[in-house]
Length: 343
Image (cartoon, rainbow, N blue to C red; front, side):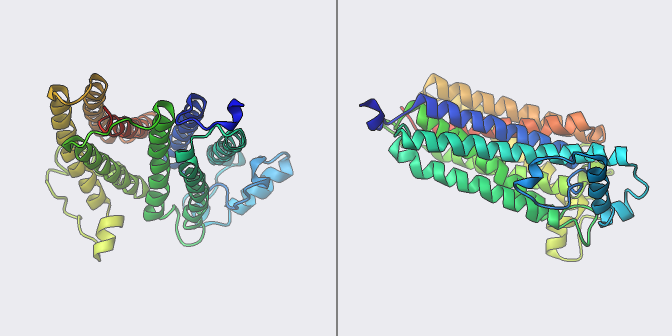
C-alpha cells in the first residue's frame, strides 16, 4: 500500500537529485577544460544519439578531422595540426557531450521510476519536470553556442558561452534547492526576516559574477592585463571602450576583465559582511550560521584563486579549480538561502 502514498518528502529522491547535481558539477568542470584547451569546436556536427559513439576506425577519424579542417579555427589558428593533436582536443569535447547525455539519462530514468511508484513528493513533480526541460534546453543552447564558431569566427561567441554557462549554473542551483526540499520536506514554518532577502541578493550577485566570468573566458580576457590590483598600471585600462556599448560590455577584453574584477571586490565585501552578520545573528539556527560563514570563506578563497589564476596566465589546472570553486560557492549560497527560510 505504501507505493500508493505520496509523502511530503523522500530521501531517495533527494539523493538522486544531489547525484545529478554532482554530475552537472562534473560537466561544468569538463566544460571549463574544453574551453581552456580550445577544444569546443572539434566536433562540428550535432548528433544527439549517433554522436554518443566516438570514431571507431581510422577512416572515421580521418572523416571527422576533415570536417574540422573546413572551419575557420583550423584554417586560421590550427593549420598543420596533426591527427594526433586533433584527437587530443576531440576527446575533451566528446567527453563533455557524453556527460551531457549521461546527465539526461540519470535524470530522466529515475524521474520516471519515482513518478510511477508515486514516491515523488507532489509539490516537486512540476519542479522536477521543469528541471528536465531546463537540462534539455541546455543541450540545445550548447549546440547554438558551438554553431557560432563554425563559420565566421575562430571561437564561440562570448555571449553565447555566457548563456550556456549561465544555464548550467542555474540548473546546478535549482538541483541543490530541490534536493534539500525533498530531503527535509515542506517547512513547518518559514522565517519572515531580512535574511531571506539578503541571501537572495547574495545569490543574484554570485550569479552575475559567474556570467561576467563567462564573458572573460569567451574573450580570452584572462590572458591580458595579468598584473593586479591595477591593469597595466591603471585603474581603468586604456583600451576599455569598444565601438558600441554592446562591444564594450560583451567583447572588449579590457572591459569584461575590469567588470569581473570590480564585481569580485563587491561580492567579497558583501559575502564577508553577511558571514559576520549570520554568525552573530540571534535569529538564525546553528546550521544557517555555519552555512553563512562557509559562503563568506568560500568567496574569499574564490577571489584569491581568481587573482592567482590571472597572474599565472590561466594554467589549465588553475582555470578548472577557479570554475569549480565558483560552482561550490553558488551551491553553498543556495543552501544558505534555503536554510534561513526555515525554523
